[in-house]
Length: 151
Image (spheres, rainbow, N blue to C red):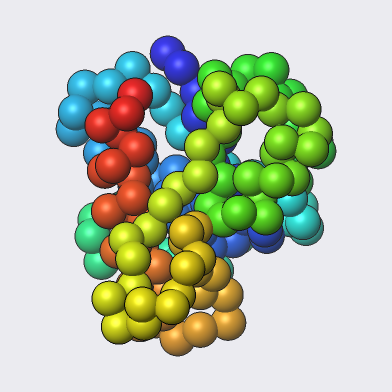
């Protein structure tokens, strides 16, 4: 089984949601992949944010046992693909030597309400209300579905 690592900043919101969503969709598709998550600035052994847990619970997924992981503390050789949640995470992964062919950026759909919003990664909901986390969750679902078509 191949392993994927989703990477965000604190590993309390985006990357854990992406990993649990990916694992659910990959299982439904019969893919031979499993996802985990980590953060480039994670403070170790903390739970997922309360609103992240609630947002994925609404779609039948569970983040209640998630604990944060700090990227430098992980054996990166066990992963066949690294998925950054925004451009900064992508550049950090590149700067630590992850080869381009093992690196992806999770891209969200364009913001139809703001044609000048050129960000490509998933917007961080940290500190936002439950609706911000729902929006993030839905962006991740769309982006992960697209990612799965490329595996």
